[in-house]
Image 1 (cartoon, rainbow, N blue to C red):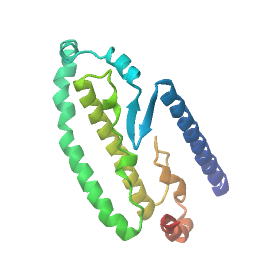
Image 2: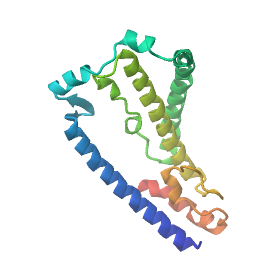
Image 3: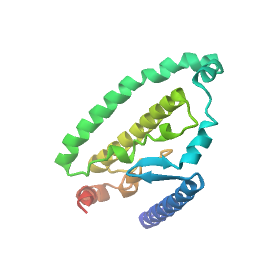
Length: 198
């Protein structure tokens, strides 16, 4: 494929992504209306009668634990042991971006855009289910936060596409130069870096 064909494909991919994100926002608005909740300053607010209905579906903690498979119970300490490296990663990456991104003039990544912890507001979850949801929301949000920081770092230092396509590349890859195109790399590196200033 020629360079212009690739650029056209990338532009179409970006446009499609924007269209899908707009459609997702519309669907989320419809879902909020259907399940009768709203967001106020990032906090979920259900209508009172909906919360009462949700509580009817809650499984008591003791019943939940007794009904759990033995393997699930035995694997819980393994799952929760990851909290230590996750928190350490969170602290280290946050410090890294606050130092390095300021030096490189890369916009800081907001944790709150990636780490979303809100499922504990659901009245149909018991305490353990809420804890699990908090943990999963934090862990997956943290990985997304770290990925965005790593993607911005890669865009600044080595904006070159790989020779083969990765399964799920980050969004910044679209701005990278083609693998093997030495002239484009040397000619566009500063332009790619300066794009943060726009």
